[in-house]
Length: 442
Image 1 (tube, rainbow, N blue to C red):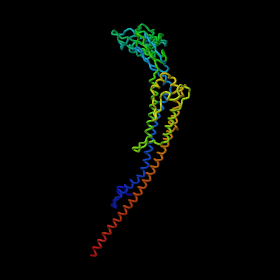
Image 2: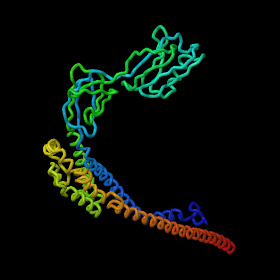
Image 3: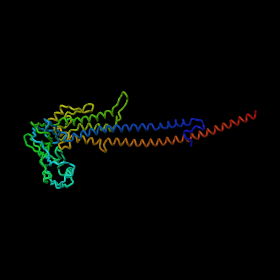
Image 4: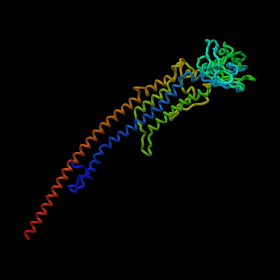
């Protein structure tokens, strides 16, 4: 079979160009299918954008369903001697804190030695106890250095660490408790080779909170004030004032995050369903039944009353109103007042009295019908995926049909090329013969 490159060589006809034109014409049969594929892929991408914004909205609503969102507190403390952090359960209040003593770890030092690395020429057992733990025995023998004994101590899980300090006259083995407080004090029962002198006594932190004496093994004091952790950095010359108050700003931010997420969904929906009369262009999901269903369900979820007997039954009671363009708007004064005066009521509206119902749970149920397996979005995208698969099969079949047609044309052109070539050869031969006969008759 003649190749495309060789078509027309025998006949002199532009069969190669003609075949290319025919192939281009046949390929146009693929264009409507490709256009449909592009359209459905674009719709699939549009649903992907919608799903992303809806998932963000669901997450924001979920946070409102967590009662901890509305138990958030903030704290302030005067001075630099004490720092604080709060957790769930902290109650609003004012507290006077005085620190008279910081917790510290015991540190004891041995007598001095001339070298930390040379053989001490000693043998025996160094015994010590940390707090109420078991006695630790560290054996040493002739040939061991001070560094060897240090390493042997630190190899034990004793609750204390050994180090070597040069005091200018010699090297001392220093034992320091891992933890602060009297419960981690060190007692020694070793021979005279390693008699220890306590340089820093183990002691507990001592403080008062609103006049109540408190003692702590560490400088991190938990639950002296409910839900508050105090970190003691220094003793106080004058009382530090701790103020714990409701963190209405954090609560407000959580509500605003939900409103912003809802408005982002609305903006996405508006873009996907818009129509521009000037340019006669339509949004990718204009008129789409799934899009209409989703918008309807969201509107319904916003307006469904919460009938659990709480102080608030509708978003509008909290100053969250739906506007004519479909977005939500917050009346900041109304919401701030509700969060300040009736935090429990706001929490009950969003999270329910049991922390598992209320607006957030109802809204999440609606979101589930849209986003969960078997929901509206999955049904729509599965339909598009099925259509794309069908179009892909149709495209492949059409390509096969075009290839078959072009192969048939190629064969026919090859035959034509050969036939015309033969006819040209016969014509040339006859011309030569007639010319020769004409010459003989003259």
